[in-house]
Amino acid sequence: MQRKIEAHRQVVELAWRSARRAGFTLIELLAVIVILGILSYFLFTNLTGVLGQVDVSVSKVTAQHISLALGELTDDTGDFAPSALPVELGTPPNMENLGAEALYVALCADGKPGFGKFDDHLGNTDDDALGRKAPGFEVATLFEICDQWGNPFAYFHWRDYGREDKYATLQPDSGERLVSGARAQKNPETGNYFEPRGFQLISAGADGEFGTDDDIFNFKRAK
Image 1 (cartoon, rainbow, N blue to C red):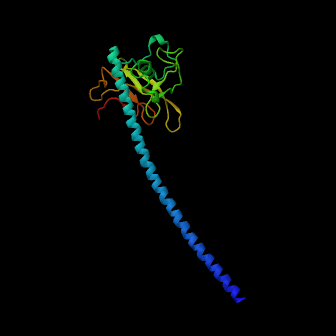
Image 2: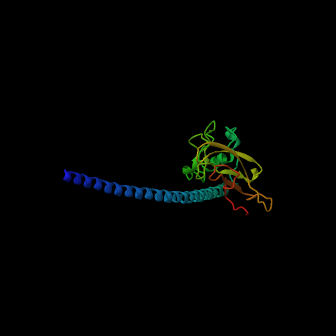
Image 3: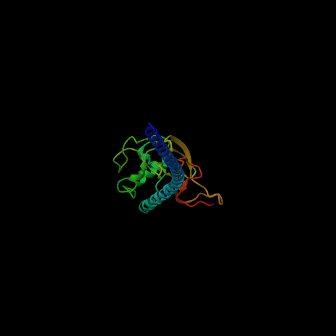
């Protein structure tokens, strides 16, 4: 009997020691999870900032490529692309994204400087189309050349600098549709428009809204 009691005591003690060891391991595991959570938070925060800067840089490069294509078009026609659709295409289907759609029509038709170069950057945030295909295009869809967030570059020929255009954009987080106004920018020091005899390209930036601090331009603004 005494042997059974002693054996039972040893089994209980061994189980207790095992439980204590298991508990200590669980605490260690929880501590590791907490540390990993903290590290993941800082890593995600820093990575988000880095990716945001990459999006800005890529959008600036896209604007440079558009500018080069506009330069080629000017060499051929003697003028930059208009920021209004040609009258022969009829009345625009709506009053949104006008400059961006005119830019697409001028640059991306077959035989034009932007043909095939911006296929990965095309969007149609206002979901519209012409009544018939424009010359040099396979479809009637009125695309826009878009930034890294999938929103159109606002485009103004210098003759239209005084115009405000309405642009439809998609919010990066929710995907909700937003309409905001885009205007050509003036130099606050001189009161004159930037690129006074050229053109202006404007991206709404990461927030998808024109007229805010994160807008991106094809020119350098005064600080």
